[in-house]
Each structure stands twice: as C-alpha cells, then as structure tokens.
Image 1 (spheres, one colour):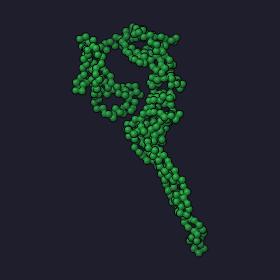
Image 2 (image 1 turned 120 degrees about the vertical axis):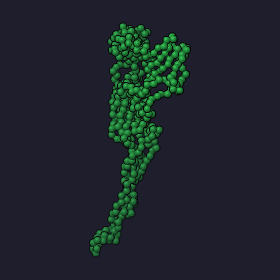
Image 3 (image 1 turned 135 degrees about the vertical axis):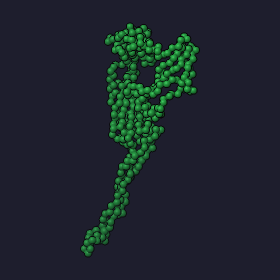
Image 4 (image 1 turned 180 degrees about the horizontal axis):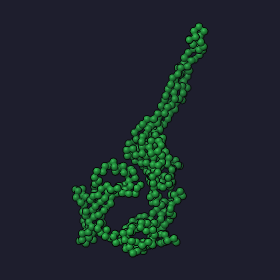
Length: 391
C-alpha cells in the first residue's frame, strides 16, 4: 500500500569492535547526484529500484582517517534513521510511528543464524508464548532451556572449553535468550528489548576477541605467536626498521721473521743476516646495522611470510598505514589453534660476504675462509594481537 518514500535520513558511523561502540561521522539525507533529496515512487508491484551509487557526505573527514580507523579494528556503517512515506493516500513518518509502537509494545529480535526478524509484541505475553504466536516450534530440554526451534538444535555447550575445541566444533551452535530477560518464561514489558538468537561456536569465539601484547622488544627476522585462530589479527606499531648485514674488517700487523738476535757490535741492530719483518693482514666479519624505510604499502605483503608449527605455509593479508602494520589471518583451515611463525625479509635474497683469517702475509701464504651471509632485518615495534580470548 506504500506509494512513495521520501526524505530518507541516514547516519554514517565508525563501529569500534574493541570498545563495541559507534562514533558518528555524519547525519545526512539520501541525495541524488544533483544534490536534491531522493524520492521513490512505488507501483506496488516492484520491491526494488535500479542500482544507484549515492555519494557519502562526511564533512571534513579525510581519507587517511578512514584508512587509520579501518586499520585499528573499526568498520564504516550506514543506517537509515528516518523517512516519510505515503500509505493508502496518508502521509506518515517512520520515526513517529516507531516511537508510538515501541512506547506500548515490547521489541523481540529473533535470529536463527540465517535470518534476523524484528517483532513488536504485546507485553502481556511471555517470550515462549510470543514465539509460539509467531509460529516458532520451540522444544525445551529437561532443564527448561531451548533444545531446538524450528528443528535447529543446540549442539554446543556453553561456556566453551577453548582448549578442547576441534575444527568440527565451529559449526555447532547454541540458542540464547538475553536482553531484558533471562529465560523463556519471563513476561515481556512495554519498551522492553528481548533477543532470542542462535549462535555457532565460531560466532561466540569471534565475539570473545580481545587485545593482548605479544612483545615490545626488537625482533630480528621474525617472531612467534601461539594460539592463533582464523580471523585473528596481529598489529605492529613500528618505531624503526633496519637491515643487518655482514661486512669485512681488516687489520695489519708486523712480525719479526728469521734470526733476529742482537749484534754484539751494535745492540740497536736486530738484522743479523737472516732477520726480516713480515707484514700480515687479517680479516674478520663484522655485523653492521643500517636504518631502512618501512616498505611501501604496495610492497609490504612480499616482506612477510607465515608458517604454522607443522612448517606449512599460512595465508595472511598484510596492510600498512604510516608506521602501523596489520596482519590478518582469514583462512586458517588445517587446525583450530595455530602457532604461527611470522618472518620478514627482503623479497630479494640479499647477501653479503666476508673473509675470516689471514688474507695477506709477506713472509708466507694467506690462510682464510670466505663466508656468505643472508642479510637479516630487525623491526623495533610493539606487537599486539586482537584475537580469541586465549592469550
């Protein structure tokens, strides 16, 4: 019966997963490219309109702030906050209708893991009665908890024993009731918020992620992080980066050679026929550390490699913004918990060489070895992890 929708209000915001809170970017209307407000005419037969790209207005928000926020575990969200609509020839406002309904009824959010539905329910009902009136087939176990709804069964146990979980357990799930109620038999109240939801073990693990510090000491070539789960992230706040190479240091010394006894005629003269001086040059490898720039964003992925405790290669995505580097493990398939060795080096196997021993002897033969070294790289950074609550 709705023939027109107009004056669509939007709110754009950052959502911080660590703090679980929103910070507003901008409130604005849904606008056409011309700058005028969008207005939708509905025939009653169509449930969608042609795909249109709308501009997102954000005042003075800079692109580098957006990138920095996304790097720091935030996402950009957009929500519809209000709109006007015409129904059966009557002009109405969504916000006013919603407030009027919510003042009198309870709000029930139901999610079975596939679809989420929102209902406004008479406060005279319990949650169980409300679910039944909505056609939900609820089966309880002997403790009065939800065993299944619409044949979707509880197969996981809560709280989770993270140490004993296997990969197969990730798809198991559990029904939960929360909000302004603790159980199905609680009576709903006006303006109350009630949630009945089915969550998989993977969903619960994802919600339990928290920050922890891995190391604040400089690391050479790489470091190891235990108990990494799919979706976990590692952050490096880099203070400096340097290349460690081997160079050669030489020193020269003089030694007497032959019969160098003092002459009885001249005590200052050591040369007694067969006496001579030998010049000897020795070389030793020396470690040299030179500051280098953090690789550019387009190159940083190639500077890192990842292996698990079985020495199998692990895929991860690497992002860089200024001096921050984020590593996200999004496809750990072989094991639930992984010990990951994170290595970094130049994509080009840069080497240096140095001799060790006597490289020159005017009275004898040189005796030295020539060694080749792979250049190492050191990162001075504080390393933190945002991951499953196991650290």
